[in-house]
Amino acid sequence: MDYRIGSGYDIHKLEENRKLIIGGIEIPYEKGFLAHSDGDVLIHSIIDALLGAVALGDIGTHFPDNDEKYKNIKSSILLKKTLDLIKTHKYKIINLDTNIIAQKPKLSPYIEDMRNNLAFLTNLNKNQISIKAKTNEQMDAVGECKAIEANCVVLLKKIEY
Image (cartoon, rainbow, N blue to C red; front, side, top):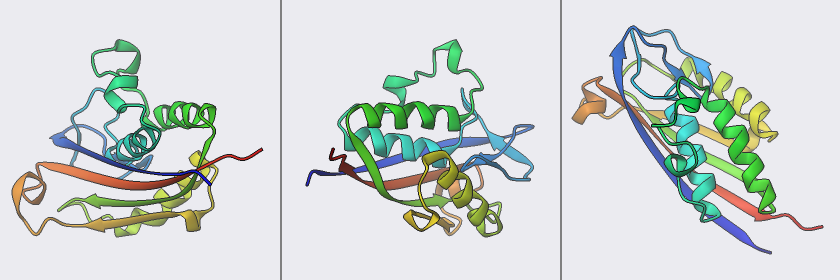
């Protein structure tokens, strides 16, 4: 059996008058992500983990932030493109383990919606997707409510025919 592990990370600055999208879910909050796309840090960390596991670079390599075709694009679309790429290399996801680090807003009420959405997008069972929400104990840019970050570890398995 051929297994691969990948890790991904993303952080985006928060700004007023922007939507806050995490895990493909819009979360009511006074700030949202300053980003070229919708800035979904959770999905971006998953994309980086997937690409890293198959040694295909990172999100910026495949979806550069200076390319106008990705301006304001939904991260769920980028995830679908990444999943297609992973499949062409004959790998499938075994599980995703993720963390979202945000001082505010409180994310626990939205975790199940995020898991359901990611299960739909990835065609995984919900029990293959872990999302944990943490604070940064009021330290650094995240703790000062200036940014939100996420990280992901993914396990892939070679598809056998």
